[in-house]
Image 1 (tube, rainbow, N blue to C red):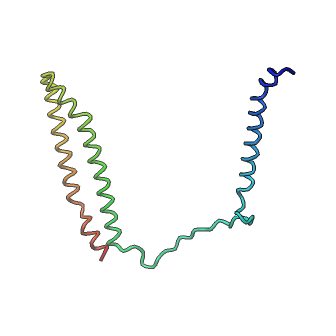
Image 2 (image 1 turned 180 degrees about the vertical axis):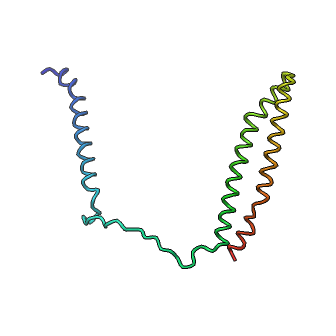
Image 3 (image 1 turned 135 degrees about the vertical axis):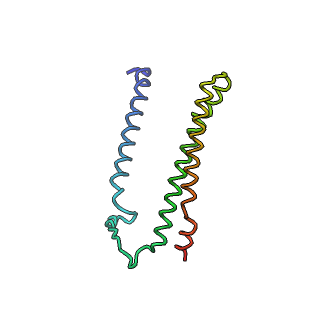
Amino acid sequence: MSTTERLSRTPLIITGLGGLLLGVMVGAGVAGSGTNAAGAPEPAPTKTVEVEVPGGTPEACLTALDEAEAVFATAGEVANLTRSLLSDVFPAAVMAAYEHDVAGIEQATADLEKFNSDVNALTRKVESIDYVTAAAECRG
Protein backbone atom coordinates (compact mmCIF):
# COMPACT_ATOMS: atom_id res chain seq x y z
CA MET A 1 0.00 0.00 0.00
CA SER A 2 1.43 3.38 -0.98
CA THR A 3 1.74 6.34 1.35
CA THR A 4 -0.98 8.19 -0.55
CA GLU A 5 -3.45 5.31 -0.14
CA ARG A 6 -2.62 5.00 3.56
CA LEU A 7 -3.12 8.76 4.14
CA SER A 8 -6.45 8.77 2.28
CA ARG A 9 -7.78 6.02 4.62
CA THR A 10 -6.59 7.77 7.81
CA PRO A 11 -9.58 10.18 8.15
CA LEU A 12 -11.99 7.26 7.69
CA ILE A 13 -10.27 5.24 10.42
CA ILE A 14 -10.15 8.23 12.79
CA THR A 15 -13.83 8.97 12.17
CA GLY A 16 -14.76 5.33 12.81
CA LEU A 17 -12.73 5.22 16.03
CA GLY A 18 -14.24 8.53 17.17
CA GLY A 19 -17.76 7.17 16.60
CA LEU A 20 -16.91 3.97 18.47
CA LEU A 21 -15.45 5.94 21.39
CA LEU A 22 -18.52 8.19 21.50
CA GLY A 23 -20.78 5.12 21.55
CA VAL A 24 -18.84 3.60 24.44
CA MET A 25 -19.00 6.86 26.42
CA VAL A 26 -22.75 7.26 25.89
CA GLY A 27 -23.33 3.61 26.79
CA ALA A 28 -21.31 3.97 29.97
CA GLY A 29 -23.25 7.09 30.89
CA VAL A 30 -26.60 5.36 30.40
CA ALA A 31 -25.48 2.25 32.28
CA GLY A 32 -24.24 4.30 35.23
CA SER A 33 -27.24 6.61 35.42
CA GLY A 34 -29.28 4.24 37.62
CA THR A 35 -26.95 4.43 40.61
CA ASN A 36 -25.60 7.21 42.74
CA ALA A 37 -21.90 7.92 43.39
CA ALA A 38 -21.63 5.19 46.06
CA GLY A 39 -23.13 2.59 43.72
CA ALA A 40 -26.33 2.26 45.76
CA PRO A 41 -29.65 2.05 43.92
CA GLU A 42 -31.74 5.19 43.57
CA PRO A 43 -34.40 5.69 46.27
CA ALA A 44 -37.94 4.65 45.38
CA PRO A 45 -40.19 7.47 44.15
CA THR A 46 -42.30 9.14 46.79
CA LYS A 47 -46.08 9.29 46.68
CA THR A 48 -47.89 12.62 47.01
CA VAL A 49 -51.01 12.54 49.13
CA GLU A 50 -53.51 15.39 49.25
CA VAL A 51 -54.77 16.19 52.72
CA GLU A 52 -57.88 18.22 53.38
CA VAL A 53 -57.25 20.82 56.04
CA PRO A 54 -60.09 21.20 58.53
CA GLY A 55 -62.05 24.30 57.75
CA GLY A 56 -60.51 24.64 54.27
CA THR A 57 -59.88 27.97 52.63
CA PRO A 58 -61.83 30.83 54.22
CA GLU A 59 -64.73 32.06 52.13
CA ALA A 60 -63.30 35.60 52.09
CA CYS A 61 -60.12 34.26 50.47
CA LEU A 62 -62.09 32.31 47.87
CA THR A 63 -63.97 35.50 47.07
CA ALA A 64 -60.69 37.40 46.74
CA LEU A 65 -59.38 34.74 44.35
CA ASP A 66 -62.57 34.99 42.27
CA GLU A 67 -62.23 38.76 42.13
CA ALA A 68 -58.55 38.50 41.13
CA GLU A 69 -59.44 36.07 38.34
CA ALA A 70 -62.09 38.51 37.13
CA VAL A 71 -59.47 41.28 37.06
CA PHE A 72 -57.11 39.14 34.99
CA ALA A 73 -59.85 38.09 32.58
CA THR A 74 -60.91 41.70 32.10
CA ALA A 75 -57.29 42.74 31.55
CA GLY A 76 -57.15 40.18 28.74
CA GLU A 77 -60.28 41.68 27.20
CA VAL A 78 -58.75 45.16 27.41
CA ALA A 79 -55.57 43.91 25.73
CA ASN A 80 -57.56 42.34 22.88
CA LEU A 81 -59.63 45.48 22.46
CA THR A 82 -56.50 47.64 22.39
CA ARG A 83 -54.85 45.31 19.87
CA SER A 84 -57.89 45.61 17.62
CA LEU A 85 -57.84 49.38 17.92
CA LEU A 86 -54.15 49.69 17.10
CA SER A 87 -54.00 47.10 14.33
CA ASP A 88 -57.40 47.51 12.65
CA VAL A 89 -59.31 50.67 13.53
CA PHE A 90 -56.54 53.30 13.65
CA PRO A 91 -54.79 52.29 10.42
CA ALA A 92 -58.11 52.25 8.53
CA ALA A 93 -59.07 55.63 9.99
CA VAL A 94 -55.74 57.21 9.09
CA MET A 95 -55.82 55.83 5.54
CA ALA A 96 -59.41 56.98 5.03
CA ALA A 97 -58.50 60.48 6.21
CA TYR A 98 -55.35 60.52 4.05
CA GLU A 99 -57.30 59.43 0.95
CA HIS A 100 -60.23 61.78 1.71
CA ASP A 101 -62.44 58.66 1.62
CA VAL A 102 -65.75 59.81 3.10
CA ALA A 103 -67.22 56.30 3.33
CA GLY A 104 -64.00 55.07 4.95
CA ILE A 105 -64.08 57.94 7.45
CA GLU A 106 -67.70 57.16 8.31
CA GLN A 107 -66.81 53.48 8.82
CA ALA A 108 -63.82 54.46 10.97
CA THR A 109 -66.10 56.72 13.01
CA ALA A 110 -68.55 53.86 13.53
CA ASP A 111 -65.64 51.56 14.52
CA LEU A 112 -64.36 54.16 17.02
CA GLU A 113 -67.85 54.56 18.48
CA LYS A 114 -68.06 50.76 18.90
CA PHE A 115 -64.62 50.80 20.53
CA ASN A 116 -65.80 53.56 22.89
CA SER A 117 -68.90 51.53 23.76
CA ASP A 118 -66.75 48.44 24.43
CA VAL A 119 -64.41 50.48 26.64
CA ASN A 120 -67.38 51.81 28.61
CA ALA A 121 -68.69 48.24 29.12
CA LEU A 122 -65.26 47.08 30.32
CA THR A 123 -65.02 50.11 32.60
CA ARG A 124 -68.32 49.18 34.24
CA LYS A 125 -67.08 45.60 34.57
CA VAL A 126 -63.83 46.74 36.24
CA GLU A 127 -65.71 49.05 38.57
CA SER A 128 -67.94 46.14 39.65
CA ILE A 129 -64.91 44.04 40.70
CA ASP A 130 -64.06 44.62 44.35
CA TYR A 131 -60.78 42.79 44.77
CA VAL A 132 -59.37 45.25 47.31
CA THR A 133 -62.17 44.70 49.83
CA ALA A 134 -62.17 40.92 49.33
CA ALA A 135 -58.38 40.76 49.74
CA ALA A 136 -58.51 42.84 52.90
CA GLU A 137 -61.18 40.55 54.37
CA CYS A 138 -59.09 37.51 53.48
CA ARG A 139 -56.05 38.95 55.21
CA GLY A 140 -58.15 39.59 58.27
